[in-house]
Length: 533
Image (cartoon, rainbow, N blue to C red; front, side):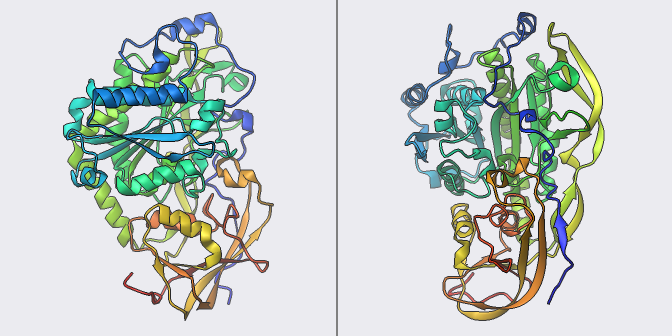
């Protein structure tokens, strides 16, 4: 029986859908833009001490993998209590180092979790050609080991992943050596880098996550004839599944703390823009759940994207690194100042998600609002602004919902989704053979699956989806995924076909010739399982 009329989903989570690739804010391999001497004269170094290999005097190259690992071993020698390990290896065999800082110098990660302090994750260089975030992570690690940030460890635990994409860094390219954008894989968890981080986050669940990137200074040249001015752009998680209390805390406490640190150092900040279209409203960062900023917000953590201003090469590199360092320092200090509130807010968010009966948001749109964009003259560097409009993902309006199920039944053909959910620590149960009333997804694609489908923030694709009531014969090897757990927002984003970048959407979970997906919604009777679930 057809339970709903046929609907075409515009996948409005793809807020940058209309943007050409060259308009994207993140740096890409292209003819390098070089800022004028007058502009560079305004981009002075920030008077702050930072200990990182790439900031040494007369340095002309970015930090190599060998240099990074040597720096981390040096920190371990200086501060034996820090935990130094590897999250795994990349496809090309490079280690993925990570560090855990506690006042007690704990080496047992279960003991670290039992400290019951806020756990802050700082992640750098998901995109290999955006080096300032990785360099800032090395400087922050040094300051946490035996520097100005060490006293904060009485009140917070800090995890640092200095370089999440070592292969991309070695090739100085945005993507991994498997030619995928790592910052579109957090929902899918198919790449060794994202799998390693997410497995570790099960051991040390984050209360707050920072993801450090760079954006291109020359983005507005074609449209406005000027350069971007903001030293740092910032955006929290913007997906309708992110708990409201987490969003409120991010915007009222942590964003102002970062902005104050930057302002006090003479640095400017603004909201992160995902692109610079030739006409029409500008666009903030998107709502796709596979982006780390949104993914970690869906887990209930406070989550931020930081993007420093990159004019090309090593131009103003110390300033770029300092903007990340100072923003992260402000965030760490704010967390240390009121850690119990952070812990309470995140815990309440996760309890709320586990007990929620609210419908799922499956279509939503951002409003268009007036916006003042900070710019600088491309020749002289003189600051200016332009009044324009902004399609703002921070204020989404939900336009369509779908009933929240009790959970999902997954056939063995949904193996990629099952594996990803297991890595994330989602509770899964083995279903016993039975017949059960379910809702089946019927999916029709209007465009073929391409690599862009997987990297959905630049996708222009529509799906036709309908729900059909079906008495389902559950066989051996089927998995029951209950929604009464803290990961319910991640579960729904992973399994609903019209969730941007979900396993069905990108084709990792196949759809049969008749359009049926091997994922079924259960809205009434909970299925029987081999044990308590």
